[in-house]
Image (cartoon, rainbow, N blue to C red; front, side, top):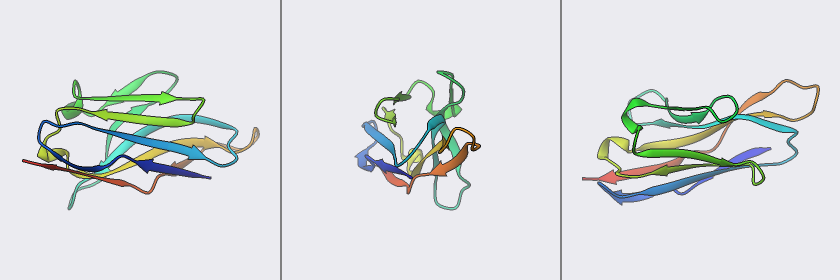
Length: 120
């Protein structure tokens, strides 16, 4: 069972990137899914997430610029990032609550991280 993130890269200020994170393996159900980021010297912080059902939560600085979406059939969560700023530079990690069997509790899994670099 793993989360595979992709889509990071180098972009100029004002540009856009789309991150993807796909869950694979023997998974019974997927709950909350989201994206976190960690800039050099800073703590990991929530960027955007689906909490329960279709309820979304965004970090204040990305509201109006980033959009989180998910495709349950593909077990994938996306992060569309528009109007990127240099301060968005960070390693971005996907996160998901995965239940591997009906009677087992859900557990939190992390993807490997994908680097987003925004140049000024």
